[in-house]
Length: 237
View (spheres, rainbow, N blue to C red):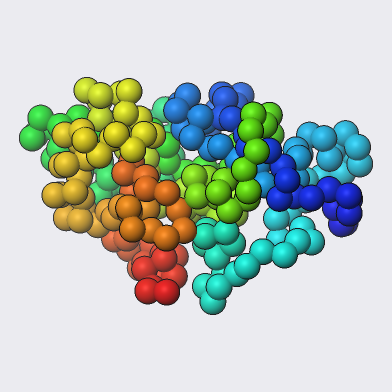
């Protein structure tokens, strides 16, 4: 199925995040606020009402987007959704890949010994949930797709779908959840010094030329599967 030719996906206005009625959504008000764009179709709901059909997979949309050798789309790499049987619940509404569970929990315990209290804000997010976040919110201002893509991944292009990504906050400074100001917290400073010991890496640094700085977003690279998944991200382009 093709999109209506009269619709220009790059003229779709920016979206504001709000709470979604989804049990997986521990994204909190600031994560939902931090997904400010909607860049290919005006809404899944509108398409279903008008055409009474299922959502259009991103890879079926007929549009021109510059891709590079590692399949980025607007700066984001594609990631498959990890099978449900590889996910484990580490606390209410927070699931992660079983391979990273022990390292993640051990890192939190070690931080606690140093007086640092890490908060897990968001772990695994299904592609369907990412789709809801990305497409279903009302627009509040206009931006080009390339600008919107700097602060939120399209469905199928989020590290969270692998189960190996975790968003972390500081329990003593919750106002910095999903904010660049998180870098000023004791939790972030501890992570910079210690996260590598537990095989965690900051995904989106200040020098990332595709995606805005996210000091709260870390990924696990301590298993063969994780290293394979993030091989393209670690490759110098």
